[in-house]
Image (cartoon, rainbow over all chains, first blue to last red; front, side, top):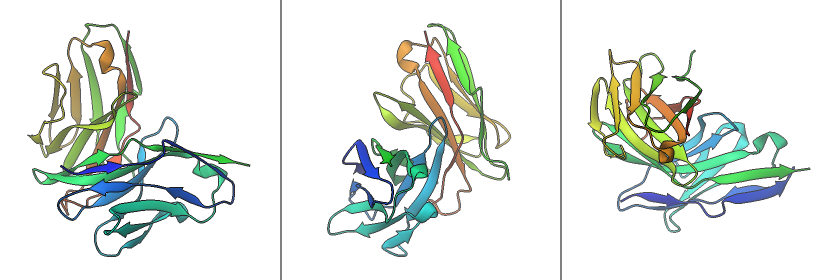
Length: 115
Length: 116
C-alpha cells in the first residue's frame, strides 16, 4: 500500500526564514506525489505535484519540492516565509483506482509564521 | 471560471437523523471524489465517481453512507441515522480524468457536519 508520512505536526518559522516541511513516502511502485495547502475554513489548493518529469518541482507562491528516491522523500521548501503562508500543508500520494486516482494524505503540518 | 461548490457549508443535525450533502463539480470534470476530514482520522477518501458510476466505494465507513451522481455532474452524499462520530468536514473534489495518476483534483470548500 502506498502512504506518506509528514514529520512535525506543527512548524513555526520567522517571517523571511526558510520553510521546510517534511514528507516521506512508502511505495512499491513509482509514486506520484502532491502538496496541497489548506487555509482556515477553506478547501485544499494544489501547491505542486511530482509527475516524474523532473525531480525538482516548482509550484505556486514560491514553493518547491524535490523528489529524492534514495531518501523516499518529497520535502516542501520556500526560501523566505511570508505571513500569508500560515496554513496547514498536506502531502499526498496518488493511488490509481478504476480510471481515477484517489489521494492518500499525510496527517498535515500546521505552519505558523511569526514576526 | 467557477470552482467546485458544496452545500450546505454548515449542517448541524441530531443523532439519528439523515443528512444530504451536495457537490457541484467543475463543468466538464468527469471524475468526482468525496473525502472526509476529521480530527481523529485526518483526511480520508470515501468514494470516487467516473461519470455516474462509482468504481471505488472502498472508503465509505459503513452502510449508512451512500452517494450518487446524476447527469455526470452533481453528486449527493447521504448519511443515514447519523452518529456523533460522523461529525467532520466533508470535502468534494473533481478532476478532468485525463492522466489517471497525475490528474489534479480541485477541492470545494467543504461541508462541516456536526452531529449533536
